[in-house]
Length: 106
Image (spheres, rainbow, N blue to C red):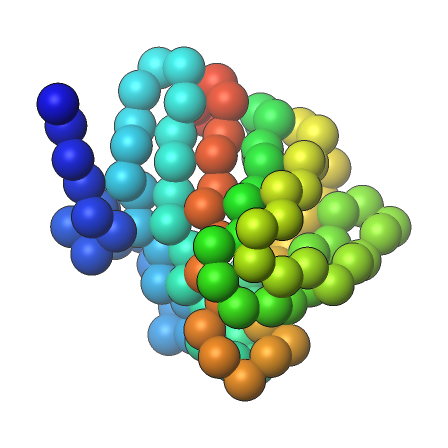
């Protein structure tokens, strides 16, 4: 059994408002725990693999291509590869999201 808490994952944070920690990395999958502070954002970017976002806590907005939707806890959102996507905390509490990329980007 392998157990990892987000605080023990590899820190790959892109800035002060976003904490990003890799908590599982295998050839077939990469899982990142994101915590975005109120008012913070992970700006639009693309990935060469399929991604899905599972909202753990809080609320915010997820933008994929030309669509931007409000989401809250217990919501899963799929994002196709090579389509720009971004996450935004529009609330007043942390926005925690599990990001799963499959297969793991090389």
